[in-house]
Image (cartoon, rainbow, N blue to C red; front, side):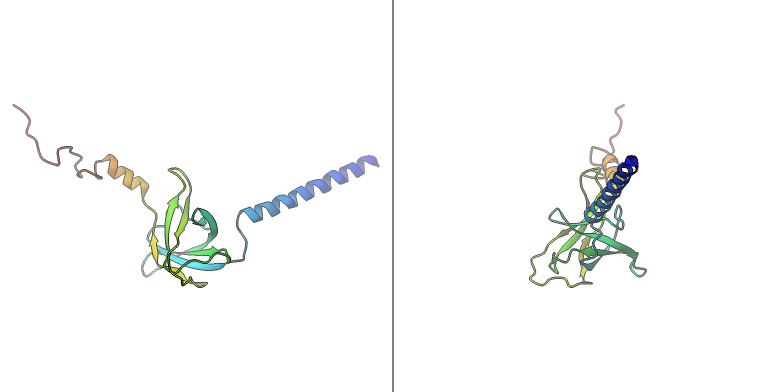
Length: 163
């Protein structure tokens, strides 16, 4: 009889710990429904997915709720859920950036100076999509950045061999 009580108490403790873990995960992943939606159109959304952080001054203020393709302009429309306590000026800008060279991508909002705030459902107009790091690195390695496309170090002039 004593073993049944101990097993019941251990089982109850495991259930309480599991519930606390679920509550912890729910709060830290930012899946809270309180907030408002903003939109932005990006030319490139490499590294961005549903659930990606939206940060303002380095602090998480929201998440990416959905991504769609504008079939007229072929730009990615990013729908963001922003914390209701955070107000974004209507002249703010948004860019895709990453935390470090190998870090994950996130959306960074740079607040503008306007006194007028974006309403729920509003759109951030000034955006910069993701930078193609592999393409940029390839151009650098092949001499396309700061030099010429041929990779010659002599400014592209052809030098005749000495006889």
